Length: 329
Image 1 (cartoon, rainbow, N blue to C red):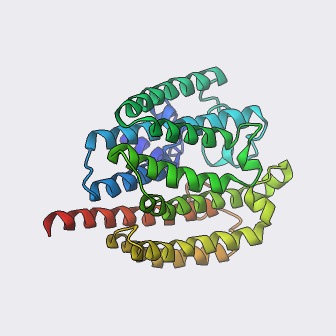
Image 2: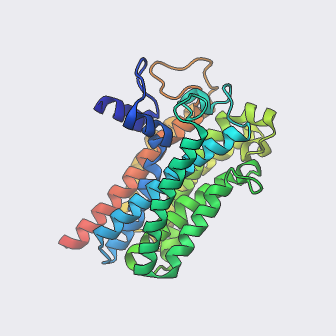
Image 3: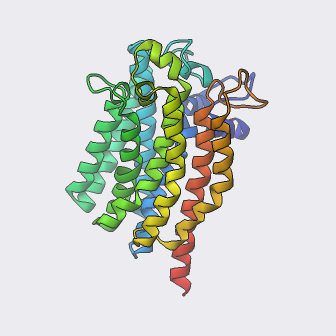
């Protein structure tokens, strides 16, 4: 059971031959393998607040629960809408790299909609409580996040189909999640926090670029105008690599501007992995999956996520070290 849970958390998949039941089935449906990005954004916002003396563990845990639920709702809603709109089909990559709630018969459309409503209801309760504690800006953060997340795939907005998906990811996982978490804990926000939210928001946008590179051919055939489809594959691949590189001077600049603490320079320790990722992006995608590759046919997004996890981890470690040094010095 624990091995199955860990496999789903890491890859959104079960080991071969295992049958999804109960908790495992619902973990597959909400796709926890990408939720580390949400947890990282929340913890960045919380540690930025803690570093300035606003330590509220209770509010931090409540925001973390609320945003993980929101991410689960977003994943389920995307699958439901894309299935009903005819985007998710058996030959589409979404149905290949991990079980699809509807296409693979894990749940019915009605059951998936009910799960979305229940999770969303819990999120509303959390948002109402935080609004009572911190005021109307919490509601503004929540509504903005809901608008962008639902509009990502839902017509008539369909940001993904208009080449705006990556911008939405940067805003949601950067200013909205990091800034919103900071505000929920501290009760105010300033320009430094908005700036501090940009590097990791950009790192999440890079992951989404990788995902859309993986889906480039089929998205173009289906008329789904993601940013890589609008740019063209080669240009989008080069832009993705440039954005990866840009994160490092951006962190350095924000440290010099005192928007980020010095400890966040630990992200530079991920440069060896960055170089490996850039080399893999420069090489043609293999025709068959390498041994033990967990999410085939996805390639570029898996590599970007590999970098994301290290960059996010080092960013958090730097914030923690800075907080500890402030306490002991």
